[in-house]
Each structure stands twice: as C-alpha cells, then as structure tokens.
Amino acid sequence: MGLLLIGVIVSAGCIGDKTTEEGEEAPTGEGTTPTTQTPTAPSIGESLSDLFGKAESIASVRYDMVITSPGNPSVTSKQWVKGNNMRTEITAEGQKMITIMNGDQQEMYMYFPEQNMAMKMDFSEAPESAVEEAVSIEDYNPTVIRTETIDGKLCTVVEYAVPEGSAKMWLWQKHGFPVRMEMTAPEGTSRIDWKNIEFDDISDDKFELPAGVWR
Image (cartoon, rainbow, N blue to C red):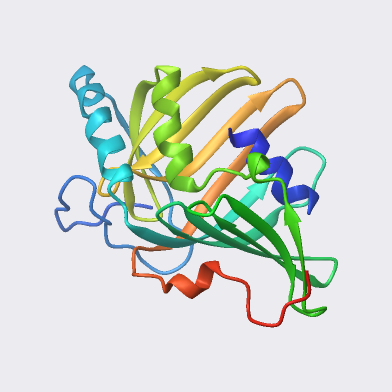
C-alpha cells in the first residue's frame, strides 16, 4: 500500500479561540501551524467506520503530496482523483512527467508533455490514491491512539501493523481524508503529507491523453 506508492513516486495547527465543530478546519495564524494533541477516549474508535464512509463518498479531490523516505530527497507531486481515475504530475531532473490512470478503461499511461509522447504502463502496478489509502487501512484493524490538529485540520490518529512494519495515519475528521501517513520499516520511517486539499469537481478530460500524442 503506502510503500508501493512511495516507490512509484520516488522512482519515476493550533486550534483558535473560536469553537470549531468536530472535524472542521480550525482558524490558523500566520507562519507555521503547530500541531496539538488530545488524549483519546475509547468512544472515538467507534467513529472510524464513519470516517471511512466519508472517504468513500468523496466524488473528486485534488491535492499536493509530499513524500519523504530514508536516503532520498523529498518529492512533491500533484494529484487529481475522480471516481476510479487519477492523474499525477511530477517534475524529476527538470522533466515533467504525468501519469494518467483511467480505472474505468483499466489503462495507465506515462505521458511526457515536452516530447509529446506517452508509454502504456502495467495497470496492475497502478498506485493507490489518497482516498484508497485511507479506506484500505480498515483491513488492518487500526487502533485510535489520539486526536491531533494539523494545519488547522482536526484529525483522528490511528496506528496499525502492515507487512512492511508499522504505520500511522492522520484522518481528517471532517472528510475522512488522510492528511499524513508514516510507515516504519527496517530501513527507516517514510512519510506522506497531503496538502492543499480541494474537493472541487474535476473535468473528465483531465484523465485523458491530449489528441495527437505519440504512443
């Protein structure tokens, strides 16, 4: 799950004085937003199914994804997700690369806009979107350990065991969307941060290759 996503990409706040409803984005000041932690009550764990339900109901979302892994520089990519379709844009060594995954057609392409060229990829190796990452952890029997506010977003923090080691995920209570994930394996701890999250509608042509692309 998460480590596969990290491999694919690498290879190619304080709550203000104003009362905020559970899961809503809290007001933030200028500069870096510190995180706040709250001890977890046992009853919070009962809301996990609701959080997963919120994530599954997301029709479309776009976000920036920042990946940090041992021995590698941090990598930032942009992703657009709508239903079973996903688009990822990343710049590596000065070259822009776009991965277009059309889940409805079971196709995935790596597109190089500067060369106007695209290569068909093995769809079975398609990485998970942030929504799929969040929903998939239900299979690992996650345990709620606390609540924490990150970038003004009130999150439920869960931990769980995975074949690679152990993991934690910060789920935004308002949307069930992940804000952060950490995975600890023998080689160290990798981290994904999801930022600039927007739930606007996305045009279908975002998940199609432009006309005239050589492939």
